[in-house]
Length: 219
Ligand SMILES: C[S@@+](CC[C@H](N)C(=O)[O-])C[C@H]1O[C@@H](n2cnc3c(N)ncnc32)[C@H](O)[C@@H]1O
Image (cartoon, rainbow, N blue to C red; front, side, top):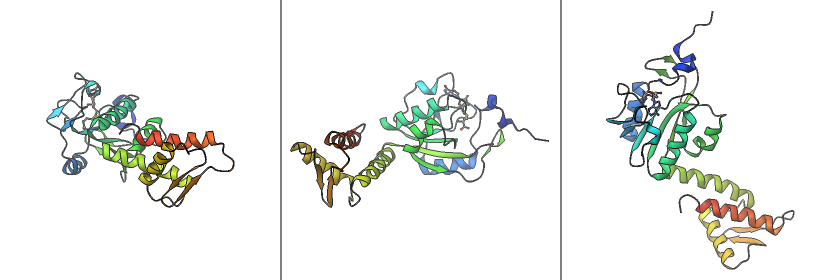
């Protein structure tokens, strides 16, 4: 016979209380100042928001946030909020199910630092989780570092010898200044040339995309 535990019911999915040892470890590392989603009884910080305050509508940008959000459909709104607040200056540490196939994981979580947790969490009020969990950390520096990693991968496809993104961006700047992008881009260790099967318009679009993405959001 299958034994059901509270965690298997989605109607209970809003109240998974963080195990205290996990919270203590993270709190030692980050020194949290805000719990944006809790009840008065489960708040992890002196500053907190409950459903009555609606944490999603509040400003977190000056805080170091511990976020263990409701695990229902609304989780995507919490992740999006965490990501946006991090871009404004917050550090947000999220404890969430490792649902790595979801759109919000791909749109946001993978842009932060991801720490997959070993085994299953034992939530203080609901027993063992029927899903794997992860801690995802968003802050400006981590978001920038991840973005540069992604851009670097694309640059490496174009010019494998290239060593740094700054070098390529500088080279692109020089080429843009001299209106020479249509044949290729010189950079310290090599040359990003127009691939044989690519029109100069396409090439300019790719290099232009790199350029725009590099300068987007954090310029
Ligand atoms: C998974 S529990 C986490 C509780 C606590 N922060 C912890 O880590 O143990 C999620 C909490 O978010 C609260 N919540 C749901 N919607 C909210 C909202 N719009 N604003 C603030 N809190 C909300 C729920 O009442 C629930 O207590």
